[in-house]
Length: 387
Image (tube, rainbow, N blue to C red; front, side, top):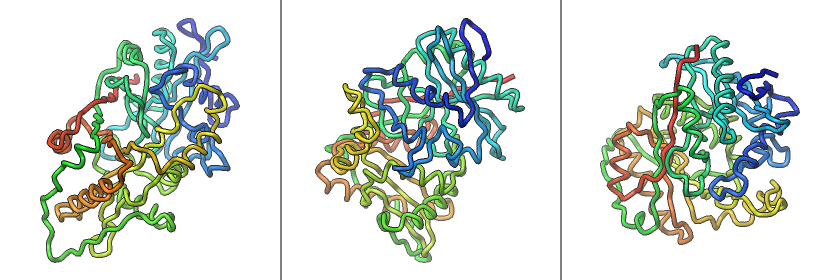
């Protein structure tokens, strides 16, 4: 135990039996809050039934690439806060290395919050890193990034963070400063139906383009294709790390209940994987808190996904990328148009959220405004010196 600021901070390594206390704290922090959607416990602690390797277990594939330590804050015999600190085992060669913090949750107490952040900063500094950035997920998949600073009155969608407004006060009061904002926008069905089909074709006669929906009967091959496209198409994006096939399979372990193959399309250029676009019915629509303990059990929540997953009205953008060698060949416009045409034919889809657009991505923001997409949420990533 490390004492400070009237609170005890305990290191909780992977494999500790106290990790269940770490995973369970948000249920206390957000009890009764309709906008926070609890993750499935299997996503955090693993489940052989779901084939899920939990993020907070040593078996999760991300731990091959990051070194992480978790911390619990105790006061009066109760867990009152948590944070994770991590460093990449193989830092990006294009950016000055940094450590990170994430999974930050705390009661409304600045002393406790600052004690946790100080411990995370100290741990990162001891690992030899001069900067600490967050809140970030140490999973390689670009989910759950940033701190929500705008849009507290709506339900969080798949892979997006919900937190109390006072978190920003604690983080900024500790000395963190903004690095980058992510935006999220929302479209309803009527607006999508009025969207003009995307033009801008630049196809050349030397390239033959073919597209198709994802093949759920051959997920092994599809995961290989997606991983190849992702690591090439997103390699220059800010805040993105390369992913493995194991990372993709971990995400699919939950999404398999709701995936609509018509909403995920892959493009090939002369037979070579070139681009991918994907929307997914938002599982959070069915995973929201229920009033009874029974309704919040993983098995019950998974049953809701299995039985009702194809009737979810809300869609969330999952990915859209073209490999650099195949850009400006008409692939992006073809994928977008095919996706729009399919989605409009499905009457139960009512809303579409586009998430995690960087604030300095002028092209995508202009496109969103052009089609009437309303920015309604903002997440912020912070940074400070670790030494």
